[in-house]
Structure formats: structure tokens, C-alpha cells
Length: 181
Image 1: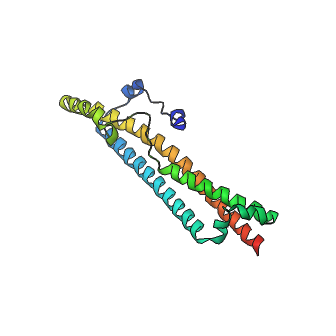
Image 2: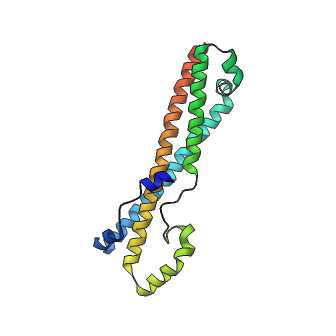
């Protein structure tokens, strides 16, 4: 959450007032909103693939399982200990990072476009609708895009960590196999 606060969008209420509010701009904001939402789903899918691969690897690989057993570190020679430790650390890091990607997140506020904020924004939407206020729609999309951008950045930061950990784990595994043979 601290990372989300640090990367909070700089668009203020004064900035929104200065922006043109035509139909084309609202359509563009809708497109940005859809793209950012899709990017969040893709980050979750990438994390799921990494998590599934890691879990399958740890279940099926005897070397992978052995790297999490204390006996490996007591009885093995130095290179095996180093490669096993590196593999276990990288696998653990990849699993944790993949889990952190899919944890529910919220942006810095909510809009009527977020189901969790609907109760708080329902009356506001009805009031803006009765005034036929196109600026309200523009501001809602803009605020939602700010939130989605924040969420996507945090998710992709963890996807990057998970993927790099996966690569490191595979390299440690290959070195471990070479050291065993």
C-alpha cells in the first residue's frame, strides 16, 4: 500500500477543470480504462502461470523437494548446499511474489466504476444523471484510470520479481544437476 501512495497520480481537481471534456475524450478515457483493466488481468494470469509452474516443479522434482529439507544442507557437499539454497530461496521468492500479484488491491480512492465503491457513489451517479452532467463521467473515468494505473504498476512490479526469481531458480536447478552428476 505504501508503494501505491508513493506512485499516486498527480492529477488534481484544477487539472481536470482545464481539460477538454468532449465526447472523443470520454471515449478515449473509456479505451484507456479498458486497456488498464486488461493489463491487470494479464498480470494476474502471468502470476498464475508462474505459480503453477513453480508448484508443479516442486512437486515433481526430487531435487526441488530436497532443497527444502534440512538434511540436504547437513550432509551435502559445499556446491550442492549453495545451489540448493539458491534454488530454494528463488523458488520461495517466486511463489511469494506470485501470490502478492493476485492479492486484492485498491487504488487511492474509489469511483462509481469500482463495484466496491458503488454504495458510496450511487447517489452521486443518480444526481449527476439527473443534471445530465458529462463532466461527472469524465472525472469518474479519469479517477478510475488513476486507480487502475496504480494497481497495474504494483502488480507488474511483483510479476517482475516472480519472473526473475523463476529464472534464477531454473539456473540454480541446472547448476545443481551439473553438480550432482
